[in-house]
Length: 285
Image 1 (cartoon, rainbow, N blue to C red):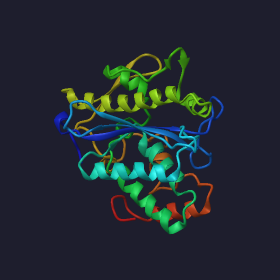
Image 2: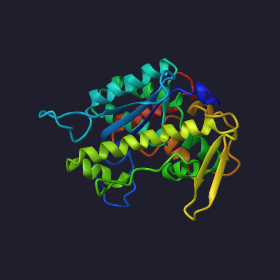
Image 3: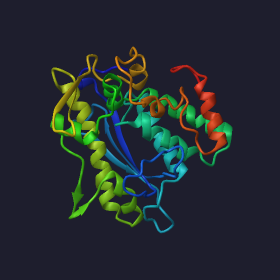
Image 4: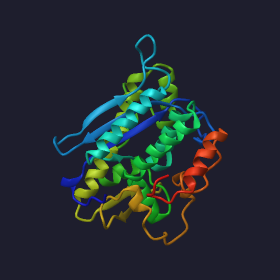
């Protein structure tokens, strides 16, 4: 549901890191590339505490150390946590989760499932994503182009993405490689910082008199987009009238259950998505 006052804001901010390293500059296509998930960070606000409760989610190998990538059963446990918190009035909060995190969760969880079981999981994920807050999607829908997490954190004075720790650099592109090399601590700090920054941005948006996002462009200019009704869920964002100008193809990523997405590599997954595409948004798939 729409929330427009910070005292009413409850959520589970989350961010995940991919597990498979790719060369610098490679544009990951989750439908075609083997991406995997190495770790997920959450920061939960329920209104009980003034600060969020942080948690890291990852799988362990036989030696008890962090595994190369998260197993399906651990991802299902994370999915169950989001469902439980959503039922308690604290839905998920992400930065582009509708376009990346949620569909990647679906792909990773269902890749070895039978079609009926996988379809049930896709429906659960679709429901969760529709009920969650994605301020990047909300801004994209209004402006027609994506906005970076770091640029927005700077614009709102919430902080920046973690760039280095203990003298070692880290980025979204390098996190997967670092994790595979066993530099787990740095990646844990990185993903937790992203989840915390997402949470700070959401709280800052509602704490301001003129609610919305402020960010720095690549040229150093400052931009602003107004959220007249506060933060909206993904389902509510989709209820907006069509944008005033054509979008930069966000539907290719965002509408992975209602529009034609890039063909997934597995025909059974493609059939599941086609089945979901026949359902109107908000109705039972």
